[in-house]
Image (tube, rainbow, N blue to C red; front, top):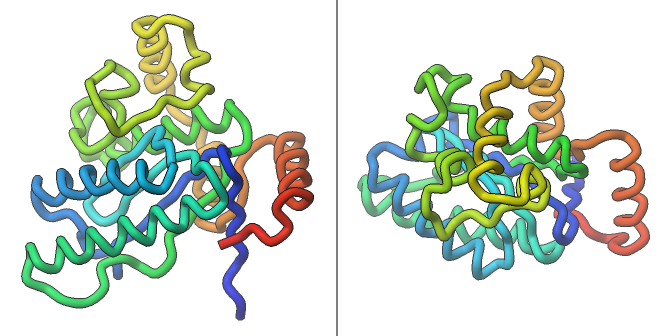
Amino acid sequence: MPRPRRLVLPSVPLHVIQRGNNRLPCFTCRSDYLVYLDMLRECAYDCGCALHAYVLMTNHTHLLFSPDDEHGASVLMQRLGQRYVQYFNRRHTRTGTLWEGRFRSCLVLDEQYFLACQRYIELNPVRAQMVDEPEHYPWSSYRINAFGQDSSLIKPHLAYLRLHHETIPRQAAYRQLCGEALPDQLLAEIRDASNGNRSLGIEEARATVLDDAVAQFPKTGL
């Protein structure tokens, strides 16, 4: 059975999930997280992908980024995955695969869903009961987006910037948003779209963006 076609569009945010093989850990010490983030910074820059949010869980990662072109996402994930596996195998004296097949992804087609998806990613450690507050988890972008922690990794998306025209009130508005639990239905929508490589957004936005994509990029898909 052919694998489902993955649609990637220039400048349209993409939520990407990559899991460790057999749900085994892909980060086992502080150095692993630091090396992955350093590689992510380099690869995202080289591949023309603007990273908006991330979280590194013990056995999987979530990334939210906008590629400059329709090939940027696949090149980024391939390059990042290969480089990190080489590091991980050397560091931990192992061989073989680390990741579970292809990464999963979904297009995020409107601003309301973008902010929901960013919150979904950064609140993941809280839902997993690893921490009580998102700022207590060191391996996510929450402190960057919510408190202005210095970082060369994150490039804010327009949907986030529109929360307020000034930095401090914008961060406060984002913290307030993150203090509100995502509704169960919205959580299910994000999970279903990401696991099924489908688009995420209101029907009107989905129809408009996808129609334009078919016209402009009839063969786009990874």
